[in-house]
Length: 385
Length: 109
Ligand code: FES
Ligand SMILES: [Fe+2]
Image (tube, rainbow over all chains, first blue to last red; front, side, top):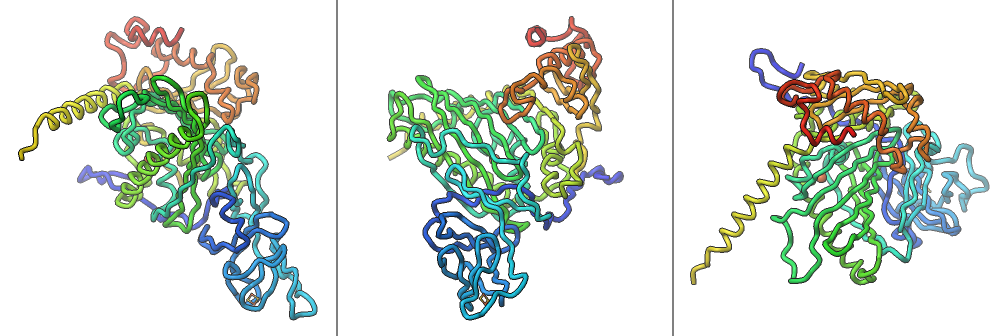
């Protein structure tokens, strides 16, 4: 029961965050940053991992701790196709097998460490996490990103930051329509979610908020609104096809919003942006759009983080009819925390939720007008001396 | 364990059959514009539009954004009062088509 009968007070309930980590592809960042010939240390899934590029060019991810006597492979050296441990120079291949012990005649039996399946796609490095230890699921393959590594689009602009809370907070955002207005200073006019299989989509149209518009030089393109089709593919990787509608052109961008858990109480949040170059938008102008958008998205996430830092974990949110399908999104998300054999139909069956933005839009329109009026009044006051 | 949506306590979902292909889904409407649709495997298998979409109904390609036949059936069911709406959302003068706002009627066409 969520209500104490005597008081009528609704209690916030929250079980501890799960210590199991989601099954699925997780992006570790831009692949190029791992191609410097050095081992990289990554805290993820409650463990320490080592990422290294072997001589054959492949990016590999292993448990960082050497099975010999526990040396930290991420402090080691890449030698040929193997990572060499700094402690006694044992050589580990990307497949997790010990290939060589320079001072020994032979490698002992079962000299094998944990290796994560990797995917080097569209300029990003992904690892497949699976508590059951199975290979990547065919049906959860990641989509190719249109425009990634394409000359007609800008290069990735990438940003990452550590957030000290459980990853569920960032997932909830996908269904949380109203926070876009209050936290992100956007104005959603249309909002729909569809969850099915391992995909959780969000369709959102918005209009520019006049009260939050940056002051631009006379004659600059005016932003009117945007359309966004965003979807999580699996538990942590979201692509967002985001088109900005200006008074004189549409600008196509793709935004990646992804994360990987460090442990159950923190995660690395990342986003990437590419912008399509087009008529009236050369390389420099497109890069400018990308930079502006990056700044905007970064502020957006900083605003989220500010909320997450201070909020309570809550398993029983009290939703009104103008809220999105938070519970159904969490039901979808749960599929990644159970064994594949235990995935319930309700977690993966198609669920559609179209929100009624009529009432929120009326209220927000008024708030925008009030803010503008207040701004105008404040500007009318001439400062003394 | 994931809890049920607290809003279902006020109004549960109601089955609606598609007038075109007879697929049955669970529907909830809190207002004329808000719609929740819960599919199950049998419904998904039956839906004609879903089966004939290029990707076979995947949301990846967004070619199956919604089933138009089902959308119309839901609108009809809402207009005829077959599916209840959350209190306060029903148009004045009852739930029949006569009471529905004009723009809503347009949506169902
Ligand atoms: S601990 Fe790694 S080689 Fe000995
Ligand atoms: Fe947010």
